Amino acid sequence: MPRSIAGRTAQRLAELQDHDLLIVRTAANATAARGSATRSAESALPELQDVRAKLLSEIPEPWRAQYERITARYGRAVVPVRDQTCLGCYARVPAGLMPHAHDMPAITRCEGCGRLLLWVPSTPSRPDRTR
Image (tube, rainbow, N blue to C red):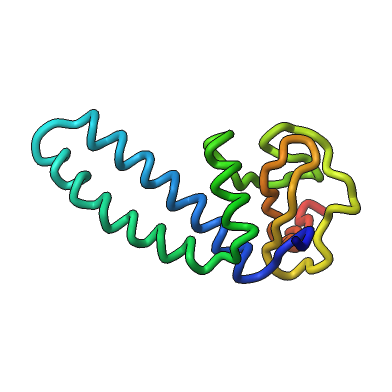
């Protein structure tokens, strides 16, 4: 299995993570609310599950299995990297794990916790206008 993925597949994994969080929130609202709010949340769940299945089918098998396994363990499989730190376990990520492509989203695995690390393209900093 490759050490990292970039581009569309990495983007799809991040979208799947966001979608799974939306499903959890919608399901929680459906059980907590009463009346019409419950019916609308319950009716939205099948559609959300269909979108999830479509997103999952667009991810290659080794990454799909990893995503499901890590989600079952931690609840959140994809975490961002900030300042070379995994925001899942706060371990420092070695420079060797940084993706080679800096112009598209990429995903690698954290050596500390095993979560999928989302590397987003760096944006140029704004010029300092105080000078």
